Figure 1 (cartoon, rainbow, N blue to C red):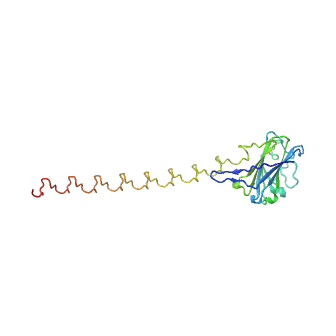
Figure 2 (figure 1 turned 45 degrees about the horizontal axis):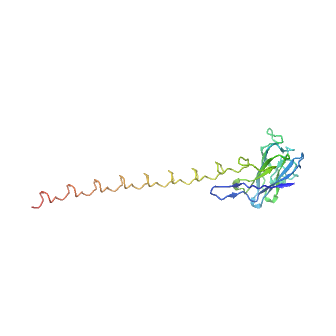
Figure 3 (figure 1 turned 135 degrees about the horizontal axis):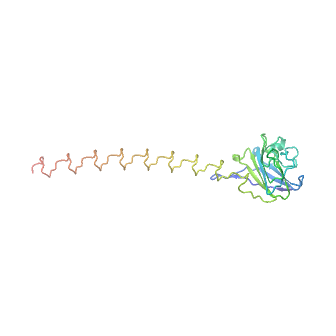
Length: 285
């Protein structure tokens, strides 16, 4: 028996926010037993371990993607393991099902072994199952728990991914583990269990504070209803422009203005007599 463990923890990275890793105590191990299947298949068992700080297990997803059709399922009607002895078959189980035989609910995203007309006939190249239960009490008390078994033809090359959610999963994001099957892991971008692309338009993306966003603070450099009055522009709340013709402008004392004091240097009706000219009221010369 060989034991292979590859712990790649999916992390959420926000621009300008501290990196928040996935639940640190969650670990998934994959154990390969060569030739142990009823038809000589290699048997891959997946074990989940986690701590009290991770809360309760809620759901999981198993994706096995092979280069060729090599996934076997001798008993298609049996899809869960439970506590009944872990059948030599392809199946998945929740933590509580593994501990108490409560049964697991499964969504067959790809490779449906039981529900017509979607029933597929093994061997298949892709298995993608999501599984959960509605019971409480899936605590670390039952860890480690075997949550899946997959039978695969020997020497078939592929990879597997296991996503785990618990009651403490940050923003409901899973912890994801990748495993190579008879080869390296080369899952990159377009992956069924790839964490959301936080640089794209994603519902779980934090608000882009550099874009026109409903939660963006008012752009104080643009015409914004919340912008304080632009005191350099013609604005209703702008104080009177004292350099322009304004109704509230004080009288222009340098112009012809009714309120201008008499121009004592001009011929003005109220100018005192010109004492240097021939004037009737000029005192005798």
